[in-house]
Length: 168
Image 1 (spheres, one colour):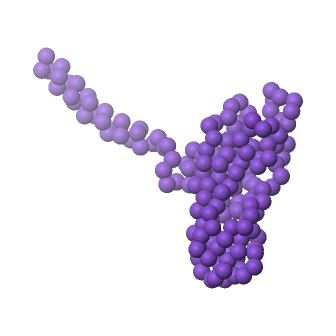
Image 2 (cartoon, rainbow, N blue to C red):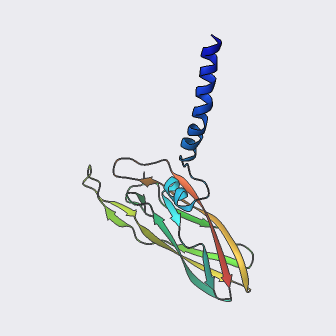
């Protein structure tokens, strides 16, 4: 009986390093931007922008939808679909005046005759901001959306958005 127990302990000790290596190869996100995009299906591409002090200025935020996925536009054709919505809070000397969304593109699912109105690949959201004084301000907010592929939709998600805006 003791010999069986020793053999079992020896086998477990030999297998432990291999189990650790296997566990390390599994990625569930983390700090890696590529992994985060896979988890969220959408990635913010422009996280730093510049504007001028005084008056209102248009700035562009670029987002990327993972290949093989789409998200509903800001104005989907069906009221039951979840629209994409960006919310940014004014901060410091920077005031967010408006958010303008691009038009969606028609997308037809193989199982439906009615096209959807979606964003795929890269899409750009235009902000109108007013900076009262020079400096760098962090704008924080979120992009709320629902990612889908040709077969199913994932639960709605909220992507944290942080943009460093430098006013000169």
